[in-house]
Each structure stands twice: as structure tokens, then as C-alpha cells.
Length: 198
Image (tube, rainbow, N blue to C red; front, side, top):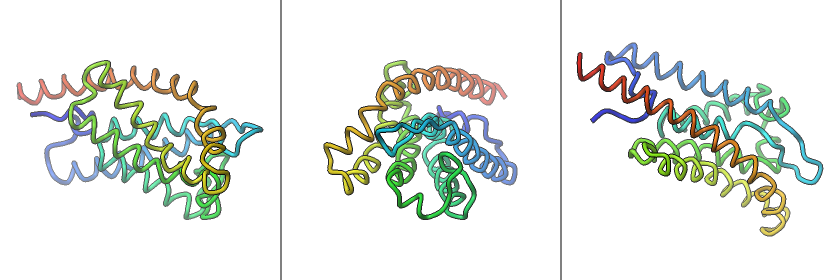
């Protein structure tokens, strides 16, 4: 049975091109996440900015699958730790990863992996399924993000600072992601048909 993950459906069938394809996808999506992080709006009442990162992180898992998606996030984090200005507002380094938003950055690995895992299990081929998968992907980054904020601010304050203000924005990101995922499902299905016909 063909994979519903777009990256897998389009993957070359021979070994060397497939490896090159995987490396290019992982590296490319790590850079897309870095670009999305620069679309950042600081909020005066919380250390957590509004960014397009979560949108790109969840799509990375959905489009690349669990393993490639998680590796792309790990590469992104490694780029930041190495000093490249890939985190929000052009920040980098271990200090930022250990700062108030570090829990979200770590949670991105789980978010991409979980989203990819659920898409691989064909749970996102219907509208309702895709909606649930994308919501769960977004929520995954909040688990560690809010927990890390809670160390400094307490759980109730962490929810007020790092979760509740972002629900409307996340709803818009999920809506946009639904459109992208619907298109990816169509392309994946057509790619599977072409392979079977060939």
C-alpha cells in the first residue's frame, strides 16, 4: 500500500537518489522552519512571541513523515546551537534554548514526529481526521513549552502566558495547514496511481 506522506510518495525508487532526496528534504525544511521563525511578533505581556514556526513545524511532520520530520527539527535546533541565527528574532545559542521558549523548541521535535506518525497511519485522509491530526501536532509542542514555562512561573501563569493567547492564531494556522495537507493528499494519491500504472 502506498504511503499517504507526500515526501514518501514522491521519493525516488533507487537507493542513491533516494538518499540524496531525503537529505535535501531534511535540510530544506530545516531552513524553511528557520525562515518561519523570523516571522515573529513579540507580545508585551509574555516572553513567548507569535511566530509561524509551529505552522511550519507541523507541516514538516505532515509532509515529510515522522522520521524525516523529526530529523529536520533536530537539524534546525543544531543549527541554532551552532550559532546560526535561526531562532525567532534571529537569535541563536544554548542560552536561547534554555530560555523561556526553550520548551517549545524541544517540543517541536515531538510535534513533527507525532504529526508525521499520524499521517503515516492514514489518519489525515479525511477532513475531520486531518483536523484532529493538525490540532494534536500543535498541542504536542505546548506540552513541553508550557511545562518549561511553568518551572519559572507556575502552571496557571504558564498557561496564561504560553498557551491561551495563541489559540486564535493556532486555529488560523490549522486552517491554512488543512489546505496544504489536502493538496498533498491529492498529489500523493496521483503519485501512487502513476507508480501502479507503471
